[in-house]
Amino acid sequence: MQAGTCEIITTFERLAEVAAILSHQTEIAVDLEMDSLHHYREKVCLVQVSTRQDNWLIDPLALNSLAPLAEPLANPAIIVVMHGSDYDIRSLHRDFGIEVSNLFDTMIASRLLGFTEFGLASLLKARFGIDLDKKYQKADWSKRPLSHEMCCYASADTSDLLPLYDQLRYELCDKGRLSWLEEEGQIVCQARVAEKGGPLFLHCKGASKLRGHNLAILEELLQLRDRQSELLDRPPFKVLSAETLFEVAETKPGSLHELSLVKGMTPRQLQRHGAAIMSAVERGATTPESLLPCFPRSAKKEVLERVKDRLKKLKAWREQYSMYLGLDPGVLAPNWLLEAIADTESATPEELDTISGMREWQKRLFGAELPRVLTQI
Image 1 (tube, rainbow, N blue to C red):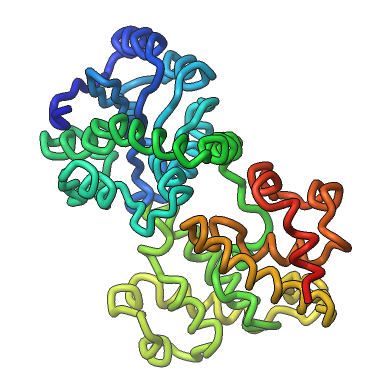
Image 2 (cartoon, rainbow, N blue to C red):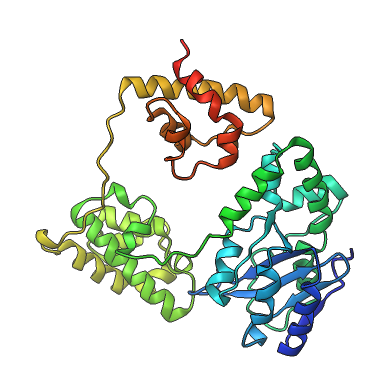
């Protein structure tokens, strides 16, 4: 299918007509473009949809509602083919309340087939000799009008997804792994954007290394950055990097000169935010002891020698079995799952059923083998 051949949908009436066409398909390809790299609050700026005959670019910024699209996407009789769908599924629900019922994720399929290169560009190049141009991957998709080149780029992400789906589905069926993909798809369909609660430092990488007034300073700095980001309508990381704020919280500069020596602090940032940063440092440094923030720390579970030995056996078994199946060990059984299995008494079916997150396909594939693995000498 020619990627550049597409229609841009900007009216509710035409969207309803396209949705009616989609409702008669057995499978459709879907992708989204967002503006998270350019604005404080990200939003879906474009929805790309392809059938085996047509491509459409649906413009949410020109429409008051995407309601007609909800029915075909939620229809369990229609397979929605996406690539790396997790955040797109979350965003569809966040912005429009739209849910997907029957998902085939070509990235997940690739991993379940044991591919080491599972990016869409790599797959299309290997399968069809198609060079997928990622020039506009970081573009601001909220800008209008969209150029012809951007439209071609966007439609390319779905125009060849259905032929890829055909091949991957056949190969999954051939290996007896289609049910694995279907279960994984059902789980991804339940993904939702979670509201970030509590202090901002809870969502800042590396914050757990700080204590007392250093952590209080970091929280003040994160709050400052968040206010400035909203005011400027820019992503927080483009206002001040987390690494820079972390160093400020650690070193507690006492003057603008000392602040200027902090790694990542540019002259422009110093001029625009310097005074506010110094005030934030002062507030954090003078926080009363009784009000100092504390990073929640779960009680560290003592790892018994028996559990460590069982985990070692499980990892050795996983290494051999994953090689036999041609799978990445982390796809077959991630470390958290092995740790949970090692912590059971005997890995009986009843005990495996209590492990949250363990897939049914994993239980069927190797559940009966686990008791022997744990007891082998």
